[in-house]
Image (cartoon, rainbow, N blue to C red):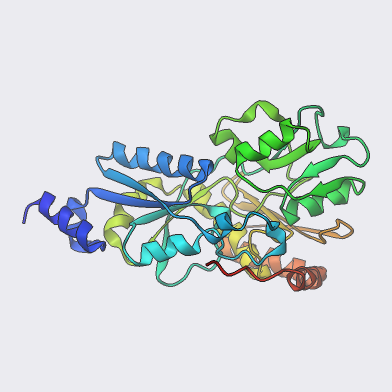
Length: 334
């Protein structure tokens, strides 16, 4: 059988034979349908095409995309943006999935693995406004848009007077609501808005000391079927060692705290030298209590777990138990 026939046969089966590493040419990417998700999928597709692969992108609608009338902080969100994509991956309908790493649960099911974590963009959040230059400049009682408990808690900790209101939708929708005057300001991830080239309303890149980012923010996680050595080999060039180390550390902390992407936990690991430095927070949603811990180490997982344990001992367990108790179950999809 020639290479073309082998690749065609693989496509029909939907499963990659690990012995046909050199013949694999078609790679099918599963992605959410949002503008940002498609930018991310197309970015990875372009890099793969440069390596000679044929690439297809399949749009998959997830539970998180279907629930648009409920603030994410009010529902249990583990897997909300990944479950349906993983089902397509398991069934062999796609060969890899491109995720915002912060959306990917910290415990990846045994049927899957994260084959690559891409070079990280700025992990911080940004303050966007048509009228005000920074958080401090907002008038008393200003309306700020975010659906993230992590952002809400930290904003409230420094500006308890602010009115925080839910903000759902893609980046364009959020910016349109800001431009229409529905909010005095909104808070977004620097990486997402920069990738889309929508930076004109950024007024402040928020230091991590003010708003600690979400674990994994700014990095893409490329998920494949566990043991799919052929696809893994093709994706190896995308794996960035620094991004792998820092995000592994942050995700280890998040896992220690039992948190998902919509709980009031922030984590930022950096490598100013050969050692990791981790800053992390746990906060009450109303900002009345904010716990901050840090640590240094060389082992990403051990450092993340150690800092997480310190936060739990200081009262983070009580804060998180209260938050989880107020979350609502994810509505069943028809």
